Amino acid sequence: MTLFKSDLLRAFTIGFLLGSAALVAMMGSPFEQSIADQVIPAAVAAAPSLPDQTMVAP
Image 1: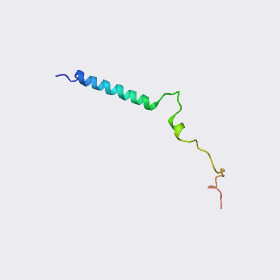
Image 2: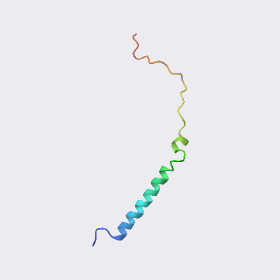
Image 3: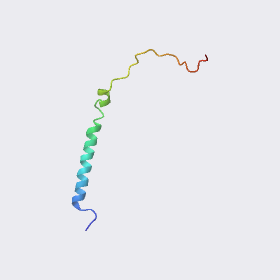
Image 4: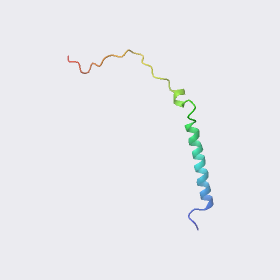
């Protein structure tokens, strides 16, 4: 009885290849637009910025 039978190695190989393919599919191509850019809108300031008042003496 050997530690690694051919069926076990074949299952690990197929699992590794399928996992790698899923990872590449989820990561996408670097040439495409990111999913975050498609779903999340850019932040826009709606109010004017005010100077910091925390260090002003009363």
